Image (cartoon, rainbow, N blue to C red; front, top):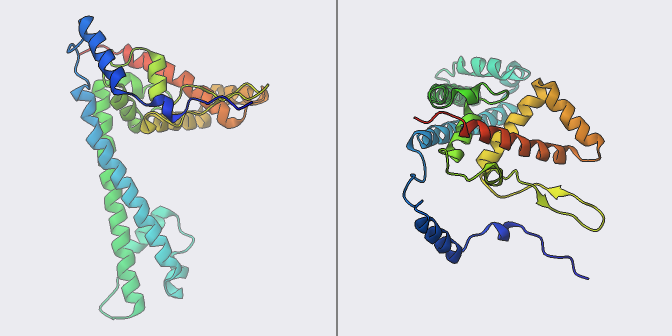
Length: 260
């Protein structure tokens, strides 16, 4: 007997017929055109988040280039720079003086100084964008930042995906959007669910980041994960369950925000 087909990515796809039927039902119910599709206030966070992500990505690439260059640098430079913390390494490289001597050491010193200064500039840029996000979120949704483990980056991803009250019909739809809804993956006598690989991956990443922060600082979160593991679940399955509960809690927090 063949195994029944499981709902995967194909189950998430839409069709023009379903879209047309949904639009007709909304029109007949008098719900069409009452709300904008996305809220301009929350969507204004998107370019700041994108710009910061670009700065972080470029900084990571520059750090990798810097460390790779140190490995192949002359022994005098390599011994001087290896073993330093990242902050100490950037400080030391930014103070290098190549001089006018056209030697290999001078060339590498110039490249190291350039990379270090680029990393420092990108760090300042990322910090400035994160500060701006935090100030805007304090105005839009200060209660989000009061939640344990929720920082400005995660809060911005939550607000962008949620957009405004009424956009999502309930917390189950929010969990589905976040890729935190349980998907049946049972086989034979084994009853289990698997991770959802669809949905808004930035929103899913925000939930995952919040859980990682809570694992380090919240004894209740650690106790919940350990209890699930003791019940026979893997750590990944325990985190998946926790993501679903977190999605429900954050959705209710967002929906309870006062409207402006």
